[in-house]
Length: 416
Image (spheres, rainbow, N blue to C red):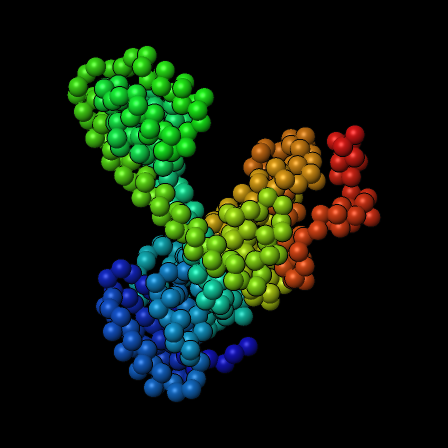
């Protein structure tokens, strides 16, 4: 275990930051109050380096990711220990049952936690820049996809109020043709005033199929307005135009992220390991790569990865009672990645589909069955990642036969 010259606890806020420096040699505790400025933080840490020259310092903070962690990354004499907020809260309650909270005291508790229990805490070891960039991009892309869904739902609701025919002609609003159509003809009246040749040219420009184009033109001519109240039409038209602008910008942002992700993956040495997984594709393969990274000592076995990701359940015991529940505290995006990949694998992998239906036949709900499948996939993915061996389904099925897995008879029955 590393001998640190000092332990620094940081309670980070928006405008000001409280710090506590614990010196184990003297037992002194110094408190500092810093404003939220890069220059102030730089000056403080420079002074700290001079105070403890060529000696490591442990830093406890409540962020696993965020501006503070990124800001401290450039100081090589600091060893960062991200501490879960719940851990700090429970530690605080042990000494303050009243749950009284104070920022300087929280900074002191963070320094104490490091000093007394750092053998139970894990120091943050950042992955290489390429992998960390990918981790941020795939998470940002997923948030943008959520934004796209939210905007699409709002746009659907607005169109249902006064212009529902568009939803029949253009069922997928998250497309360039739908955005262009609504920008040009935001009301049925404007659309029906346009010449048929103009509308036909529009759809041909967007590569509309000939038979579909004919049906659309016929439907546009015979369409009847849902409402004639100008108050509804005027307000809804303005809302639709605004939502289309936001939706178009979000779609462009998603495309830009996907392009950058694709370039990063093409140059990443481990990408082919995840691209070989059934159903991974252009979306899930980068997310799985970002989930595991390149530090193969980070997870000692598949079980530790399953626990960290929140896929593995938690067993609780009290007296003569014992029960199982899912993990409340875990990296939510990481759990979502394995959960969503399990759902995708059902469409492309025979044994995964059979395993899912087997879990459902036992009475498990959809989400629970997917978590069980994700738990199984984690063991496979971890092994492929550790050995740098791409997934081979024939080899895996042979292993299932060797261990007399109950999946084999079900798979053979499905094939016959």
